[in-house]
Each structure stands twice: as structure tokens, then as C-alpha cells.
Image (tube, rainbow, N blue to C red; front, side):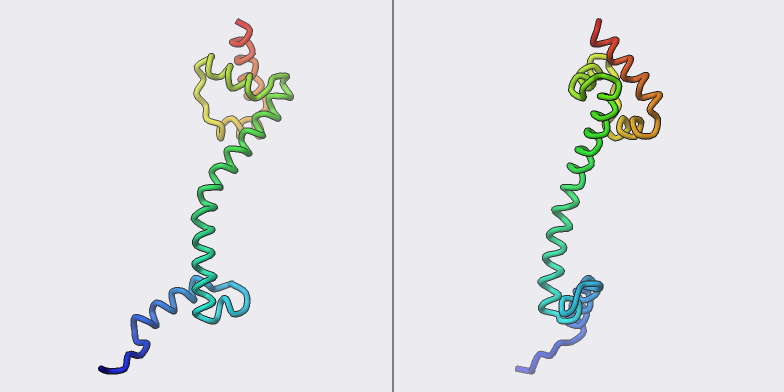
Length: 119
């Protein structure tokens, strides 16, 4: 049986892993075995954090809406309940952007919600 050496396929696979490990510290970017572990670890966390990022942004939007709503004298939960009753279907991303960049229109939105809650 002929001796199997690292040929074209092996070299290509190793170059791919070392390319993904570019920028890692020390042996993690230079030695194949250590780089493989580091890349696998990084890819696992990258997958997990792509999911977590969505949760974190939703949380951030809720915090921004709550802060802006409380300045107008209403809590977040009351505001969202009023939005539902008023039939206004803006998503949290848009409302958070509105609260941060256009406080006047957000104030008008809060006034509309307050009227709906009162009636």
C-alpha cells in the first residue's frame, strides 16, 4: 500500500482553517491542530451570538421606548397596551428610533395612546 502524504486536498483544508484563524493570537493562528480547535470554538460562539444579538437588540429597543415614554408620563406596559387598543402597529425598532431621533412625533404618538387609554 502506498504511503499517503498530505497532498492537494489536505493542503487546501489546512489553508482554509489557517485562513479562518488569521488574526488569532500566537499558535492559534499558526499551528494547524491548535488553530482547528480555536476556529471550531469561534464558529460555535459566532452561531450562538447571532441568535443572542436579536434578543439584545429587542431589549435595547424596549429600554429606549420605556425611557422616552416615562418622560411623557406613561410606563412601557401601559404604552404598549394603548398602542394595541389604538390599532397602531409599529414595531419596536421603529418606535425606538422615533423616540431617540424624533421626540416630537413620539410625543404625539404617546398623546394618541393616552387618549385611547382614557376613553
